Image (tube, rainbow over all chains, first blue to last red; front, side, top):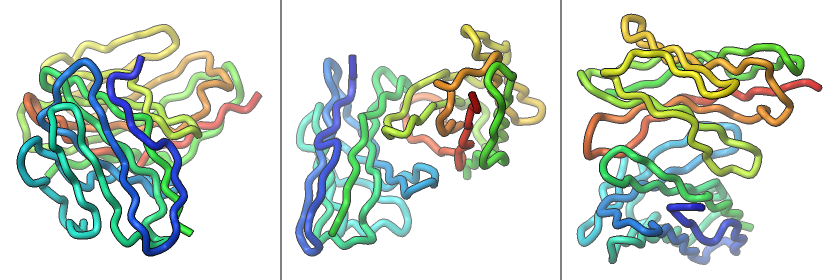
Length: 114
Length: 115
């Protein structure tokens, strides 16, 4: 079964609203989780590193005020897309590592902003 | 900086043919991990293999095999006797050794198996 669970798998929201995506590690604790973004027919690009109990580390070019990341517990990280716009429509996927370098990915979340 | 190159954007082969997907990487790390993932249309990433840079032995798993050549910084993936279910996008990825699970992905190869 899945060891990293992501929810929702698909979400449609109106332009200007915010949407939250959850990433949970099941049966293990993850002090670090990673958020990736994938545009259609493109590769996965790392957006940010989510650190439990501290601020996320964002990759260059990623707006931290736009993509809010919270990692309040050892099993949950959330990505909130604030004031979403159609260009934010994308596939978002998280990952978490167990015991160093055993990397598990969530099922991914398809976001459509209309 | 790390970089992964998958020069083949799209490949189409007829069912039962063998196909090799190329992956070339760049890293300054002396130790690292290499990965292959399969991404079907539904989007999830299916883990296929992880290879430690210390281990240059080739690996075979059923119809899948991997050829790791450290001298040429390549980690190629071969599917023998391809099947329609193998149609997907395949990603090669790289991560530093120990404690950092951040992956650098290649651009992916879209494989289509023609029945």
